[in-house]
Image (cartoon, rainbow over all chains, first blue to last red; front, side, top):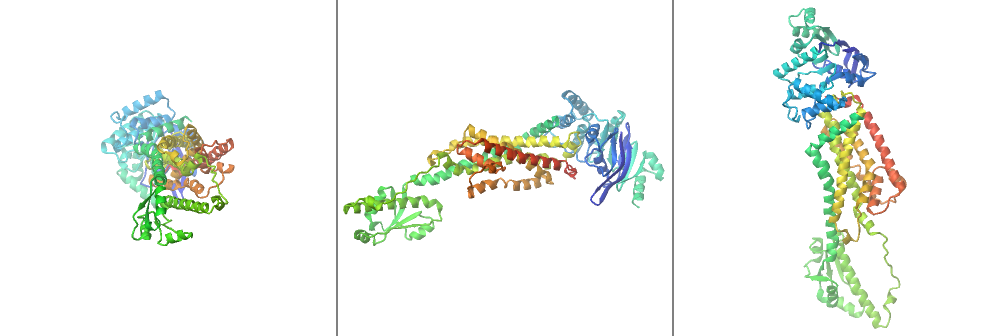
Length: 241
Length: 391
């Protein structure tokens, strides 16, 4: 469960995030939808405590990010916008490194790595160095790395960015699997179809503000548009006016 | 602290797999200086000793004017070369180091008992010819003294009448100390090696990690940034120390290829020296690693970090140059100054002198304090919000 209340963040004169509030519930996939530069990445960065909000609160499973940032990071699995791997380490070593940083013991580490490598269909690349990985292989490794400590909550910043159709579809299946396990999945995207295909709930952000927060179908009905894409365009242009 | 160890082990493992880092930190870095050192010293030995041992070849103009003088000079080891057409031009063009000219009036002056004159034609701006000029001047002077003594004896006087005063040389420099004059660059080599050994890791673990976009996921783990920094600093320090240890060992071996006894000097590069250098350098290596990390953390990219660090690399040169240009008497407070303290201490070790407890303590404490300060500042910078953001 991730709760965001009245977040504010500005860089100099630019107000990146203004009064953003929403919740992402367990057993649901929540999509953070918005055009480029809307404040999605900044919002997510405040969730995993890379940045401090000027005002507002972040609660992850009831833990306050301002008071216990380490506790929040422990409860989160994060696939940030920056998802570089260590190229001189193998895929498995990349995952293991993060497992150790999360304090897993050798036994738990081996079990989690084996499970994730199987679930993400990475057996062929697990022993290979990350140098020369395809975009899809890189994202898989980064996701395994984010999930190594078996977190209840998962934050993914544009997870399908740069993936081909097959990889995107595999990723979708994987996220459904995480939802079925009762996890709270929050992901950001600027791609409409993806949100429709994946989300139980959509939070639309434009110009640093939340302009809509509902189930995809409800959203469409609210603005009286035929497709979600029309709804999206209408909501965003309305907020800009 | 467990997390810091994990970070340390990962950084070491990753960088051991990087050929460029390995070659720079553990091969060219530690070995380049000793090899350069052997070549330079041997070249210097060659110039200084080679000329002294070789027969002295001197073109002589007007040799027929003073057959006795020339015969005496030949007996002292001079080889007479044919006279060049224009002696001044020959010296200027470096065709000859020094030319001896005996004017036509030499014999007349000599027989009248007046001071006869010979000319030494040379160019003092060519430093490598000084040994030759000095030897020729000595030979001529020796001949003049013998002839003068003979003249006094012929008149029934003691030659000692003409030498009322003699200055005797009593050089107190030990053979080691004479060596240290040449080896005053050694401390800088050690500092430079430690600097180069840690440089790649300092960049790779900060600016490099951010450029490769792996710093943000790392900061999303529940590890305090301070612990991450400690692990990275430890890895940088470990590489710098390995580099330094290799370099000290290489210098000890290189010392065998330099025949310092021919220069009448001894260089002490034994186990005691190695241990002493390691001890004095320990806090400095930590200080350098922290400064490198600090500077690299400010840089936006790998390339920018390299540029900054190349500039930072010139700073350790200061005390070495300072001590060569302005030799100062070592005082206790100087040992407490980072770099200067190591420079003084290592030079003392080269001379084979025992270091007192107070200078060692001042050196270690002063540099350790500076290192601690640098680490604290780096931790602050490392905790700043914008450090992790790559985009």
